[in-house]
Amino acid sequence: AQSVSQHNHHVILSEAASLELGCNYSYGGTVNLFWYVQYPGQHLQLLLKYFSGDPLVKGIKGFEAEFIKSKFSFNLRKPSVQWSDTAEYFCAVSLMTTDSWGKLQFGAGTQVVVTP
Amino acid sequence: NAGVTQTPKFQVLKTGQSMTLQCAQDMNHEYMSWYRQDPGMGLRLIHYSVGAGITDQGEVPNGYNVSRSTTEDFPLRLLSAAPSQTSVYFCASSYRGAHTEAFFGQGTRLTVV
Image (cartoon, rainbow over all chains, first blue to last red; front, side, top):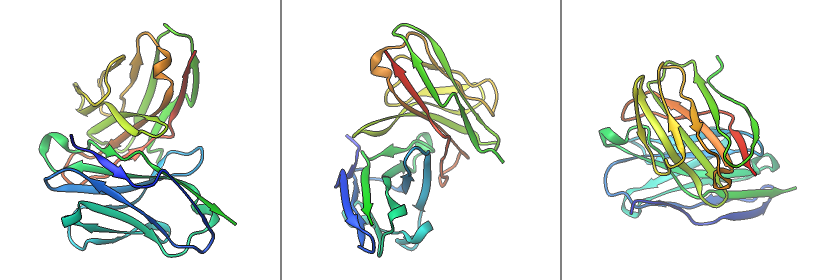
């Protein structure tokens, strides 16, 4: 079955530490890749997206992600986190087939807590 | 520009009651969808619509109905609420195409007792 896996469910780190969240997907075809963030009590916001081209994608708030096609991975990184990065992070995938446009398959999410 | 608007934000229902979660978007997006968010499971697609008059089932459609009479609105109906439907519900919209991103509403936190 097609799936999206996020490696960690909970991550706790200190301010200024580096963050890397893993995401792997199992689809064999061409995909669109996304990272969404959900701050406490808020809706999902797009951090970054990959459609095609340069596999290193830069998003908002200093986040970046690298698409490695051979590993079916789309890992999220931030060199130095802030307390305000405390949130839940979701990796999502959509297939590039006509009947799948707009349908997102989400990972289970990673809760990130940044301590002062 | 309001984006995607969901109402209500919070709701408590008794088992067996019915209700409609409202979703409206003002971006003229063709594609709209409903997801439910449960701890440890991410978001799962309930129903989606590729345009007015066209709806289809997602991953977890049982217990929910939808209709799409206009481009702007996509209500989600629970005909007979069950405790298993306690969840946070998100509506999303996007342009229909190969490379589009979804915009999400603020969510509705539903508790069925």
